[in-house]
Image (cartoon, rainbow, N blue to C red; front, top):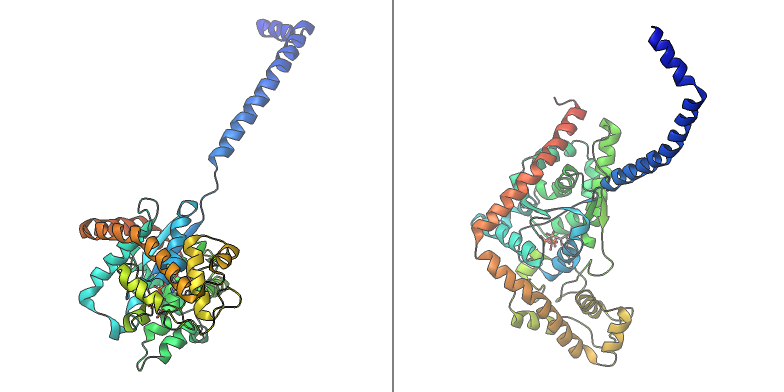
Length: 378
Ligand code: AQP
């Protein structure tokens, strides 16, 4: 007790108080500097997560130049910026059952996977998988069907134009955009890189998610379409008033350019492309067919519109077609070489698809659980 009192007295003595202040004033700047350093280091580890991208291609027909310039090429170029999920949407490919060839399906899926990789998708960086390997896609579709007013899907232009061409229209064809909404929403994708033709479907996805939120509470990320200014709508070579499409490519020679087509047929289709009887090789004033060829040239060459117009000035359509053919053939050559190499090992491709599905399945199942919980389906 007595010793404690003495210690307190010493502690409060003026020289000790002064000494404490001196020590503190020396130590404080070091302490603050150290604190700032630690805070900065912590902040550096808190890097904002990459935005997630989801997109898909149907394993129908031959993958064409429109699919490449409007979608695949951009997926590849922007791959490192995003957390990517790329899907082979086989459930979408059966909505016109008369065109389904069960014996060919498996090979078609592998062909699309091989093309993804041949075009430059890195399966280590981006998940590649087959839609039907994750049952949550079909299950979420049903739940979203129940919150989607039928008028919304009846208005879709792709549905209307496809239905017009068919004698029997399946319920699946009408429901196609709801399945697409499920694909995107399952993975909480922020961005959906697509061609112009899919913009309406991504907008519908946003509407469905918002309606779900207003009825049952927030679960989804509201996605945004990513559409590039060039190449977003490559038109048919035989008819530049309609978009280049896989289904028409199957039916009409010279409509599309398949990514794996030999150089001779590519050249032939481009030389036969519909233009007009004039000689106006300009973006703003050319006919639809000429603009389409110019746009193909623009996206592949990476040149500006001014450079392209001055390159083609006064040279006529035959020169334009020959140049476009050369560009397309040269751009597809390395893709075709890679494709042949990749297709030679189907076992490896199947493994990539299995690993891709295993990687993304937990995300899909987690979203589905949350959706069911919100709806009271426990
Ligand atoms: N012509 C195009 N120009 C630019 N982008 C396009 N895409 C499709 N066509 C063009 C984009 O490619 C991605 C995959 O789309 P898909 O699998 O639906 O291909 P598709 O050619 O539209 O297939 P189908 O089965 O033949 O359908 P229809 O008969 O409707 O054309 C998407 O990002 C798409 O935007």
